[in-house]
Length: 262
Length: 317
Image (tube, rainbow over all chains, first blue to last red; front, top):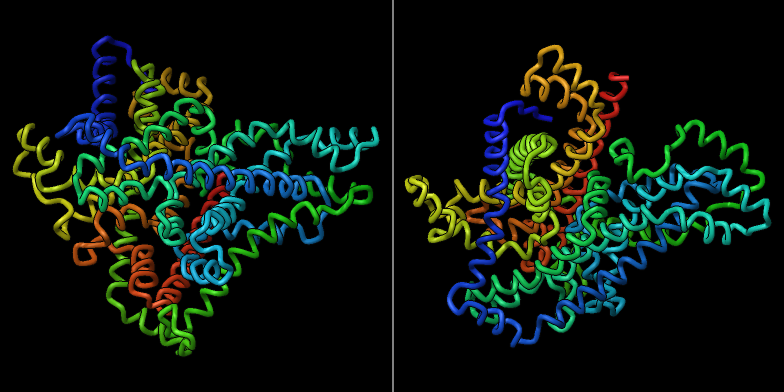
């Protein structure tokens, strides 16, 4: 967008950009450097020696995985229904879903707490998975419906003429075509589930079921505020997210660009 | 709402909705009802979320600690209390200040960075990853880092002293005047990657010939940026505005984990206040009334932005 014709102009542009980038890098450097202060790698050994890290990771994987499955299945079915089938009063149903987009999750805390206690799911994975999925679905349905709207009706009609039932047409015509948006939905849901802090904080008590976002606090009490080990646990928590991001960079950026509304 | 979906994700060209509606009406005869298809998602979302909202509405009329068997109904008393609650108003003021500052800074930074990285910069790939990485790391993970970074003996003050700005060093999180700016700075650090990615995608859509024409007419870099590029990414800016309003009202993780809403309510937000009132203090009824207020603000806020965006779009066509 900027045009630098001379060499010195190019250098100036490069310097300005670099100066603007440094503040973004700074906290990450502080994190890594802090985690290696004092005992160096010994901090990491101490964190792993507690044995909680794999448990917290496993829990986050289970919660994120279940949320993704629920969100994906319900979203695809609903997007197809909203986009390609006849429903009386369809737009009213759709708007009722969209209203939930603006919902701050803190509003749900007390009813969720009370209800999960009553139903006996408090302190289980479900207590976190179900609200996570419910908060995610309005948005993913919006994304997926827009996408399915772009698939020509003729394709569906052709399948129907060939004698395919609606379920078959969905399975063999629509689903394969929705792969790009499905990838986006999976990535967005993964991020939302993996990074959520409030729901597991309130709805899960048992340290054996807690998620990675609660790890730093767990170590604050574990090491009575030995900052270096807390930071080591923060690095350990951040690394998988960063790795997944680097591997799926395209989907992340695309998904979040589409997710701007949320 | 759909206008900000980037073309890549929106998939094949979407037919105008009027046309789509007509197609549906014409074909309704030979299509089975879609109701069973949307029902699972619908029951799930509406069942769970709307149930919670209604339950919150009911709880907000009670004086209840969350465990006693027969809570006392107090009618609208909780709402009356809210209007006389200085912490509530403090939280509202903090939210507004937070919204104005973070939106302005994030928008400006994201826009400028997107323009810069569209300008044949070296290491652009690495720079993009650095700007975006904060978006994907949980606030909860970064909280201990920022607590240390902003501490009186932390790295920020250390850096200030070593670049000759030692007089600026202060205990950032421990004093009311600087705690909220620190929370804002953390949020900007976290979310500029998102505004950057959005602007970056939007700028990729600008026809290079328009830029070329502007240059031929003698427009400089700054002029092109303000007169051509800024107006053409207007849709993104509006979407970011809506995102910021909702985001500001949802703010919880950063102030809760970094400053605990303090010192002296300097970083109290509705989210942190509701949490503290409802869970640790167990004033469930009052917390529910605060939740209802937050819900109304979120609905009104996003509606206001949506209506404005709609009007602008119409006046531009």
